[in-house]
Image (cartoon, rainbow, N blue to C red; front, side, top):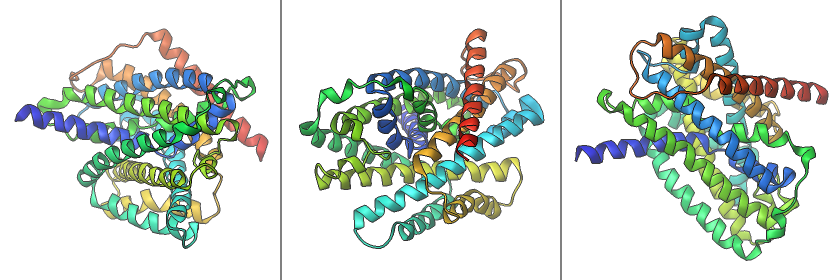
Length: 382
């Protein structure tokens, strides 16, 4: 019975990470793959996926090495000082608020497609109201809700893949265009972002069970990578160079039901991730900035609403920028925090990983260059 309960906790913890990772990014991946070429995109995803898995495990070790409950900025301040905290906050604010705004934009469009009534703007407001209320209820409800959403997500994904096989054209996978080499970087990092939910995952386990966090992190990272590959294979195989920036628009001329399934999938995934990120931000303001609970909730949820109302509507640009900035800052902070925690942690963690120093420095340079590239690209467009 006890083993069954522990296994159930691993499942719940994995579902939290899966629910955080799989969000709007899954719909940007087929578009990015269609531009650079499917197989080049898969290679990109495998390399960055391996990097993200190492970072997630590293952050898990930091969590288990530290007394108390914090978010990324709290760990950064403890091990890296004020400068580390600033980098962590930049990561969370760029990434999380960009993501939450993207979800409000796209779910409104998806709900308009599903209902064929009302306006996308109105549905976005309704979606925001429901999600903000669920964030207010707390993480225990959210972890169970994400477990249900995770199973529904897999079912819907299988249905889309099965129905799409009759339109699948292998020649759509042979395209390659190196001029889009940098495009998948931000999209994939955005789509794989989820390290900041790891402290919440650790809270599911009792003290003597916390070594199970490693297995939950591995499952929770590898499953989204696998689903992304399958989803991109089907969408790019069907729509090729005509793949839309949200993956779903290109299906409209094939079968109406596939469009509805895609919109339903989008609503599920983005709802799940909104809950995860909203909870992380709420905890950040409450635990690290000592906001009262209600004010912490309001600060977490209402800034994306204000961005949406102010006219921020470019979906693919939003997730590319958010991914590059969030992934870059977060990766650098986790690498340095992990190195410091292994030397000066509060206690011995239940698991530990070793990353060669040369690999760490290479990753730091890549992340820094990605941040600079995205900022320069943005300034050139202004």
